[in-house]
Length: 404
Image (cartoon, rainbow, N blue to C red):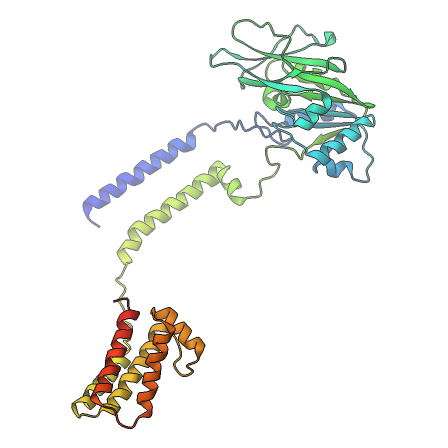
């Protein structure tokens, strides 16, 4: 390696080292993924919510299976089923099972940005979207409407500019619990944008909220927003068991991949990167030095054709047509075996069909050629004309078979 190459290598190594030091010391970015997982302490996890529920309710149970599977278990569940996620859709049988369970005197609490049509139709609801626009000062503001829950207090949320709300409700059977609006200058909320409702269903009740982020770590720990979350939770009977869903979650509770652990631990991640860079440098420089040319091994040639051709010429010079024809025929049969991979011993109908298909000849032409060959083989003496015809027929066959 020359002196100039050494200089370039040193500059490259120093540059990579500086970039790695800068990257290593860069502050870790927040993970804003809306996971809603109880164990996650990221902004949109629900670790704080689950701690509050355990403190507030006498009996809580973490449910790791689907509602359909849980409610079909021998365990006789009574109380409140609590589900929070960005989007929740049950499907026909599971929704029917949940509604049947609720009608028996239980509470179904669902916080999701959207709901399936079957549930909305059952409750006489319709949803729509509310967009805050593009101004920097624009944000969502939320409010509880119950006179006992400080309805004059406004709870801001600055991480979403879009919110769903119930644009149509069954006013005779539905109680409005919360409203939402978007605002720039004023904190006055439009009473028409309902985002949390309560409705009796059989002997039980259903509570729906289109604002699931009200139950995340970020919202609860922001200012006095915990009072808004506590206000919604106050509609649940704390003396009855609370079943907290962990099945419908956007995020994963556990990450089993070893690479996830490596790449999410700063020290392991940079050790991994250093190993990759070191391997790359070794391959580029050390491997290049030790590379040797690989000799080309020429495969042995098939000398059958050349040998047969030489012997045939020797007989022709002596005027012996019969031996010449035999060598010509053997040469031709070897050509068929090596070129078309067909055995030439048993010449039945299948042989003629296969050879015709592979050599672009008709079956009749193939049969005529081989009948002529058998005729010559059975003769003790062959004339020059017959030898010439044999040679001509074989050459014509080869030319057409080779596409010439």
